[in-house]
Length: 321
Image 1 (tube, rainbow, N blue to C red):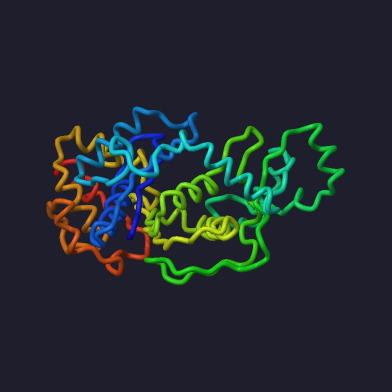
Image 2: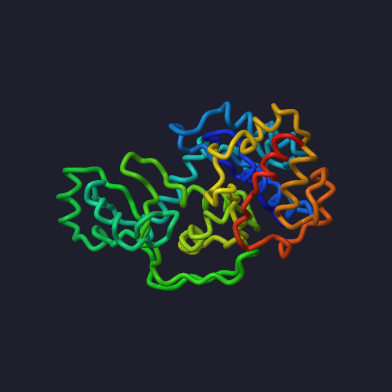
């Protein structure tokens, strides 16, 4: 059984980029007759608010996107909120640590500032960590532990990673690309990379469709799957949306960015879905259409591989349709 998901972070209002990713993920799974899951990635409680999650759920239903498992629906792999799944993350952390995949890192922020001017590894992760603490002796670690609680990093194996992306095609990453990454911060906070792998594996995800900003996180996640001896899902990354100024779409581009504002303007959901389908190559003109009417039209090969730049007219259409 094919299984996919949409896993938003409720740190703000759902914007049309989120909505597009949710729609395409939903269409992929619905066309295949699979099971679609909504998971709320609210592990960072300092940024996430229940009100945003509630609004996001309402916005998705308004668009015509439903789910078989998730908040308000339940399912065999509940809970579907990351903030309630910390026991599972700790179990995976312990497994990795016991099998020698992790090491304590005592670097302070000031120690890593110099990396800001160094060549970056994986762009979404910032500068590559050069492994300052990877080869510390046992005595050195004990000494440093008296001064500072460590974070824990995943020791990247010395092998390249390759996979075939559903939209971007063949992807190749050199051995240790991006450097060793944090899976648990010094304050005990589990990092995104480990949490998302645990959740997707535990919920038996077979297909992950998400934004292209996470493309370079994929090799790290594949290595975590392999280290934990879990099946690796198929990955598809959708190019991002940009405003008329060529910058990544955000609040600065006006009221048409968030579904909350679009709904307040009286725009119909079919109009939003039609525009999202048009810019994704699924239909040849931005005409109103219901989400369920696109299921037969869905085809990954139609989706452009490059970021989509929205014109002023397109943003106006989202505000006034």
